[in-house]
Image 1: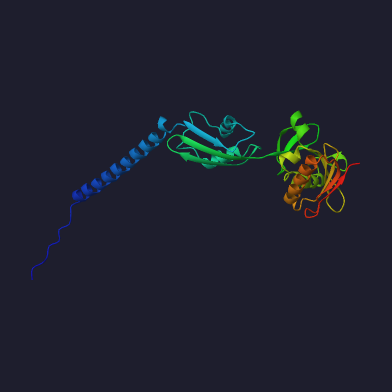
Image 2: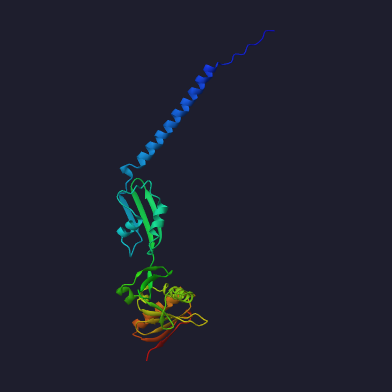
Length: 256
């Protein structure tokens, strides 16, 4: 029986094989780095610079102001811009309740915002315009002070300085926030009773008192009040009081 001879590779041959594999790995890694660098360079090319911006949903703010709040410029790179970051940046503005951003590569951004609406004026050393959710929008101009209701309680102006005043303010905003602009423009003050049962009273600029009750069914009460004011105007009726605490059975008392 003949012996089988086993041939083992020499150390030199093994070294050649290892060196060959290392060179292959190095070349592959280098190729990957080159490709990554090329991709980064390409996405920073002028092709991805912002050229077109469309803004929708704005009323108080202009399109230019929205772009400025978002921090956009002609050097903005659309590829590397994060829509979520832009939305958060816009929502820092008290005027913007929410923002949605979409991209169309290589160079277009679309911005859709939902603005807050001013519904009342908070008093103080510096009067402030406030939205229905309680966010202060800006100092009140003369126009705002003349066209938006002032929130008061017990005949005295109140703001969110204390827990009690804050609760009264929220109740008042819950009522006036449901009113449409036609009704809101006619209101001079919003009084909030301090008794055990919440009571919101709207005083119109004509002197009419509207008993609104609490902010339950505020939307329905607002629609009924609108209809009653339209009816009174069409029929030349001056009301002393209007009661919409129960929106299914409202009442109107004529002024003498």
